[in-house]
Image (tube, rainbow, N blue to C red; front, side):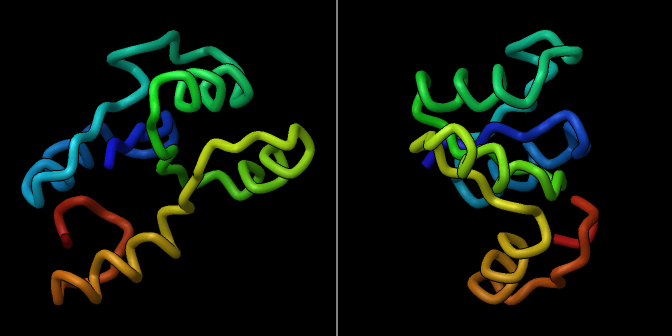
Length: 96
């Protein structure tokens, strides 16, 4: 599993995922921070990443474009992550 962390989340999330042997990169390290969500999604699809975001509109973007890229909203993904690793489900990297 490879995670692409969206611009609206802290780069500190990279270390959180890596702590659990999950490969992760923050968009700011691989792309232009000013790019549109559609560009981020295309990059993720092309490179085999799941987008980890706090944007509520990524689901709409997926539906509108028919994209096959996976995207996880930080709230729902952290619930699963927290349950699996028995950690807190708060939205900050320090709490995981």
